[in-house]
Image (tube, rainbow, N blue to C red; front, side):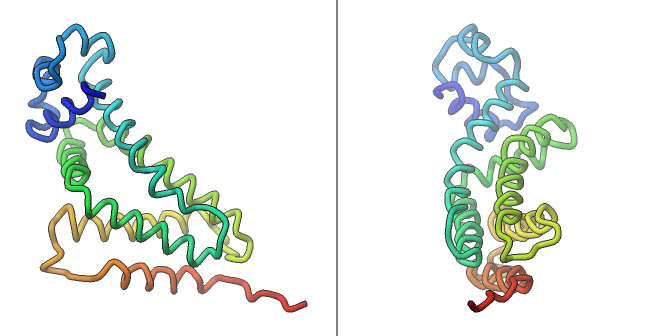
Length: 191
């Protein structure tokens, strides 16, 4: 944990290319052999950092995928994903780092997708597939539409700091998204 916190600080301050295991060790206040005893190289350390970020974020955002009216559950998930992303400056900086460095270091983007995006997509897809009242013909594509909307909003409003150029309340966006998603809901049969 101490090493990962030091790594986060160094990666955010110096980028992936500008971070060394020596710098991480110094920032984490551990020896270089200690860092290497846990992580074989900088890429392995970064992948562990992405896993750590995923473990902190994903359960909290997807905790709402439970029993309940799908419109309420999905709205709650979307709003939670937006608010946790917009309130967490370190996470926004981390996403900037991954995006900025992914051209030269594709392994960073792969680690991000594997540990953060894919699990969220799979959980949401499964939830949509398990809701027959939604009558969604392609739950995975629908999950991608929903996550894509949330991610785009988070990127434009928080990561690119566009809230003053393109202001919109998260609730407005999510209400419109729910309106679109709920167009497929089957009418409940009366017995």
